[in-house]
Length: 317
Image 1 (tube, one colour):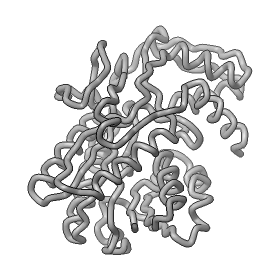
Image 2: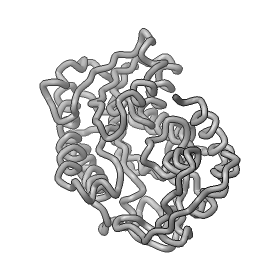
Image 3: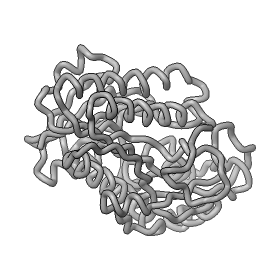
């Protein structure tokens, strides 16, 4: 099978690309190498894929139809992971987030129509659930109150996916990722950022009292969810689903710092700061639908995942 993966040089995209290649698929990777973080890091993410005979990299912005004409029209499926990411940056650049995450997604959907490609996997986010204290979060919960532009773009992306399914027959799965971490994690995300600061002897910024909770999902488990979603849309039959991809175990910020500092064998210096706009107090995934629909079965405990991250982190330049 020939699969188009957007955001192929990113954190999740590079792991998805490697997994597909290992399964014997051909991968067309698209990435714009947006300067949100260093190009060299993204190139290292793809280091093993770049030498693979079944991998082709196309440097292109997903909003640029002309640039995307380099993508072969005979792809069998699309995994759309490219986006401007991050809650806090989206508050500073809402128009950019709307443009890339919505207009870019519509360009890909229109190309899928032109090419006759029905299977489409879309990366959404747990941020669509907004502020809620109770959990677990279920896919059928109302998500009408996003509290950041990033979350709003992901909710809007799910809606446009449904529209193209209804009008043009695309088979779609929207994956709501819950705080994915592990080797190659983006440097702005907490575990990677804290590790970098601690090893350089700098204080780590902690917003609030450390009681906020996240459902951390190890990258290998997240990639397994993408594989399951791909299988479902390839089977077809009028699929249009939203599926949580999490670990179903919440970890407080305070606990995360303890686990990370233990793995690094360092004592953290904490800089207490006020809670930030757009941050949600808690995320917690209900995985019932994921297990039933795509056979999703996360297996990496948080402590093991952090240890694997630290091993990778220490091997990086």
